[in-house]
Image 1 (cartoon, one colour):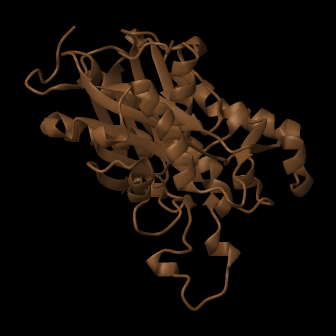
Image 2 (cartoon, rainbow, N blue to C red):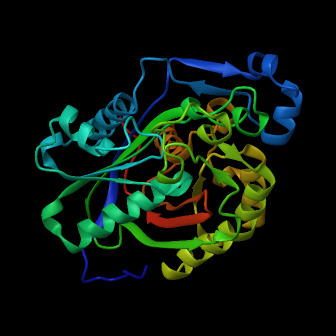
Length: 340
């Protein structure tokens, strides 16, 4: 195996965790408010239910719960963290950053903090940002990357374009030092702004500020063009994964496992086939959890690791697509075994 950039230290994922709301909504319940059937939702998306945050749930609460699991698996204390990155587009406040609140609650007194907004590709972008930072500055030591969303707060439950997909939750990963050749091998990104308006939430932004105006559902709730999203994903995500593999000097067919952003089960099935792999090479939870934005890949990764689907030494690709549209993929030589 070629060791890429041997002059830089290796960084690997050493702990994962996730947290879901206590309640979920199945298709039968959702369809009481929609002009579609439960069978239609499953046919088009494969989604059977989605998790919905309670009124008093918070993004920071979900984040801290997932982070504590990841820290426990990694076997490190919060004050050993040199960096905390929260990947989200639905944090509790516009500012300060959610990552600062997480640091406060974990008592991570030595951590740099920042939030990263790349929509549903955010967790892969966050892992790359954190690992890059660690490789050029070893004093960082350990990093915590969290994907968290409260999507239900921003959707119309009567809008089939969004309500059938979106859910809430958080996933986390702790990054730490690894042996040469282990851990992150490469990352690749792509942006196609031609459908910039296809998935959006305008309310609260500077062009649609809340100050001085009443609530307006046409701008204050999420809008999504599913067909445009599908076309973007099948066009640009496979080449982005291939570029990440090429940078790691491996073939796609040699990947042992892949985990995608959990947008739509039918989309994942299509992408796996397009990559020339079988469904045994991936893990999905979108049918039971729904699409939790930048949290979705993080939650799926945590469940896959805890379920023993990824083995030490496996070559693993992580890949996601976010609104805008932006695409992210990374390749890892896995070193975290199944927890005992």
